[in-house]
Amino acid sequence: MTTQLVNFWRIPVSVAVRLPNILRPAAGGNTTVQAAGDNVGEVFDDLVRQHPALRDQLLGADGELHRHLNVFLNDDDIRYLGRLDAKVGDTDTLTLMPAVAGG
Amino acid sequence: MSRSAVEAMVAHCLDGYPLEACGLLAGQPGERTEVERVYPTANSAASARLYTVEPRALLRADRDATGAGLELIGVWHSHTHTEAYPSPTDVAQAPDPAWHYVVVSLRDTEPVLRSYSIVDGKIAEERVVVQ
Image (tube, rainbow over all chains, first blue to last red; front, side, top):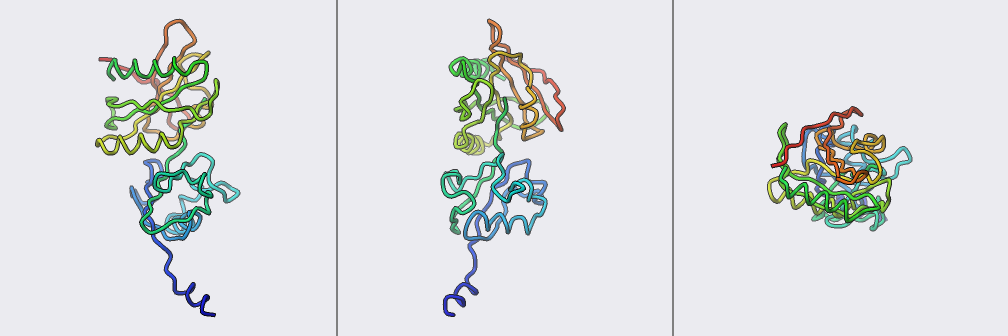
């Protein structure tokens, strides 16, 4: 019961999310937005709640990280930190950048 | 763009041969863009047919450019055996309609460098001024 109360009242951390040019129109033109969550997946859920047009840019149809999107938690690629399960704190910055690739 | 920028791009492509090589361009965005910095990067696809700018190199270049009051404005990569024209893969994966997509062909004896915009799948060649 105590744990449930603690979780109920616990406020998720808010992290800064830096957006690349091509995602800004879907987020009100903002360069940086704040979103809440304890891991990257929850932060993305909050971002999509705020800006539904971001959904298909962030996640694939399977709900996993979009394969053409790079997400950095501070200096590190989240692919090496547990992907959407990567934990975030309120001093962290997530930087989103489209993959730059071709043939 | 400067001659030294062109030389840096071509040299990186030759260094990477027979694999494709790639890198990023920074400058002030606009109609008559000047390339002010070039960032040779690793090709994490390590392929003669594909390139992927190594993600952390992308982050570092973006931070460096932003810190200098610039923006990433494009990418260059080599075509080792085909002409300096965007491939269908290049068009399909072009992320930013404002970017300049530079292709360096190593097919012939002399490298050939050309630049393109790619907007909604449409390719338009851009004039490159080297000075």
